[in-house]
Amino acid sequence: MYELRGVTKRYTRGKETVHALDGVDLTIADGDRLVIQGPTGGGKSTLLQMLGGLDRPTSGEVVLDGTDLARLSETRLTTVRSENIGFVFQSFNLIPTLTAQENVETALVPLGVKVRERRERAAEALRSVGLGERLGHLPSEMSGGQQQRVAIARALVKQPKVLLADEPTGNLDEGMRDEIMDVLDTLWKERGLTFIMVTHDSAIARKAPRLATIRKGRLTLTEKAAP
Image (cartoon, rainbow, N blue to C red):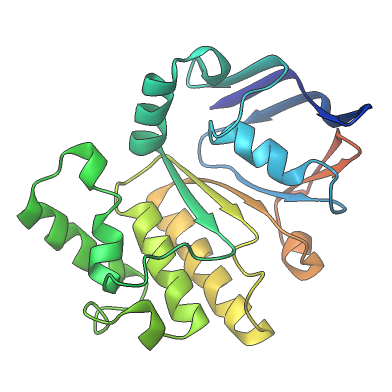
């Protein structure tokens, strides 16, 4: 479970102080699916970075399973990210000289997983996103949607508790967007993930059971009644 208490993030831009987050309070239970939406520069990606331990608040607490990420050393924070949090980004971030399977394996190297097990787990992760026949393909030999599937497999191969996605469909057309969202939704349900996603796409936001809207660093939460 996440507990955010009074999370503030300030940046100095010249003589101006920018409040990217301004006293954000938020609870995210295990297994939740939360979509974060708002205008450009409103604080969406900053909030996701706080949840992933990629940035630290100026003040406040970002507590994951009883541990305040803001107070951890960089070494311990790296370990928490490696073991518990999977990331998916808009730009895929695949290594162009590695095959799909090798790209997925990179997530297991920091965990000390041995070579044979890495290969087996990477192959299984790719099969789970529908790429079982693409293990040996380079990113340049795959479509944008297939590359994003590789990125999703890489995020999930380490079996994290939390999946954070920053505009994962931003570089895809509408048809491919729907395919990727189907993959993410299926994996969320099957694996019991805590799934938190930033998007500009209103069609995706409308389907979210919980929607956090951030404007000028302030958060408003909307919860939909169960069908």
